[in-house]
Amino acid sequence: MVAIRLNRQGSKDRPYYKIVVVDSRARRDGSFIEQVGTYNPMQEGENYTLDLEKVDKWLANGAQPSETVNSMIVKARAKA
Image 1 (tube, rainbow, N blue to C red):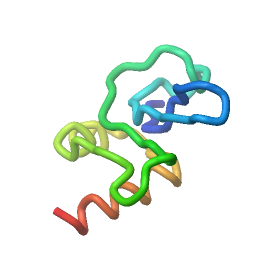
Image 2 (tube, rainbow, N blue to C red):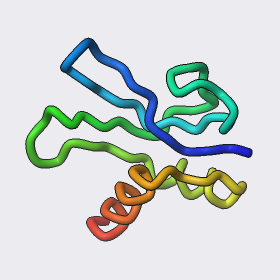
Image 3 (tube, rainbow, N blue to C red):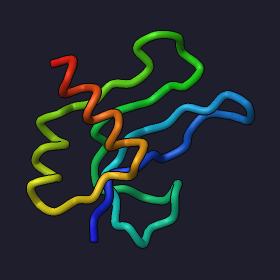
């Protein structure tokens, strides 16, 4: 099964996340299939980017987003 979830980057106390498509059995910070966006919780205001075309392609192929990523997708669609 394929999942769309966060992949942690950055240093201690300075998190930065990539939004990635990954095999659901892979480790949280392991290898991924494709990067579809970013999320920076340290940034004020607009703190994430998302390529909705890539996300829609993967959702059509059966990928399951995590709860956090799903809320970002809903917000990005409402804004677009």
